[in-house]
Length: 171
Image (cartoon, rainbow, N blue to C red):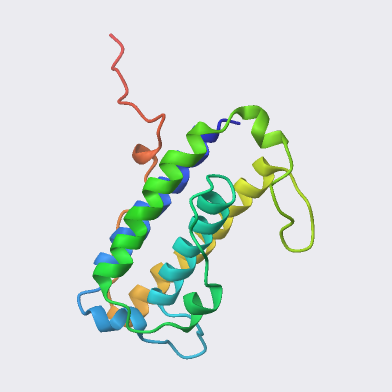
């Protein structure tokens, strides 16, 4: 497994998150709650960026970012521009930190226990990708429910993966 590939997948997911946040015509809808749903799109955006800033930026890249997980779930009405800035900063962190890791680093234990267990860095990074995708799907359904929009925003396009290249037609 290549750390740069993981960075590319996370950057793609973050770009999709950006498109999702931009797709809300009314910025206030980012913070609306659907019946039976505890997290708004704004909350999910704060959580996803805070999560990666902490686990990739701080723990692997020594960025100095200080996570406030309670604020990720407690803040409301954060302006869209601030959410987008946070997404862009997180893309930069992921794109800077992960490609600097060697494949051997993925076999080492992650620098801190997570959820009461120790695990390999590569396993945890794959978990972060799955965690991100899970919440990104929730955010997409939130947008559709709140706005009534039926279309997608170009989620998970394979053409945005770092190894994607045009197919050359054979003669």
